[in-house]
Length: 258
Image (tube, rainbow, N blue to C red; front, side):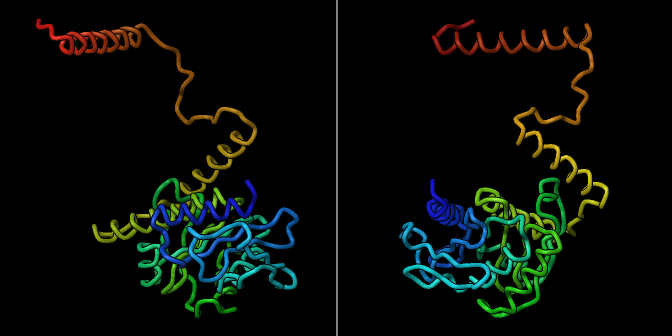
């Protein structure tokens, strides 16, 4: 699948997951050569996009090539790629709960283990949509390390090493926003402490390295403990009960009675 097709597919996922609607939101990806990006056009419905509708923007000159104008947030995308050389995909969306936190101008702390992949999600200083000020504010925030940020009174941005990772994080931002709002309503959101976050990040590094190399992911439980006679009796009993239950269900289905 071409890079343009991947962008189109990501746009359809945004709609399917209700992270965007109509022509709102925008998506980009760094081209393989690294000196330019493909970005969605301005004011075009994701459901109507074709490969020819994608706009190429050169990162150095900021010159655009294509049949349409690039997204009004092209400056934001360019600034992020310049600030984060590890980023190859950017998704900007206006999902409901993330936007609510952005309006409140709060930071979503690391509340659950999965959130260590993104880090605390701050809200940038307010700047008008499409402005250079907004682009610089977002790039400055993401340069500090988080893989997502909220835009004050606006929406959210998630980044990744590819479009799949950026989309996963975009979904996670909305889920974390829901958890944060719900926890605050229940009396307060309690974040993981620094040691817990560092442990989670370390596990994530090991997980990614193992997945990349095709190895089994190491588990934290003591899976190498020997099995004793007590364990065999316990599991045998449970297996017998399960088997008896299945036989009973089968006979009942056949119309037999005990």
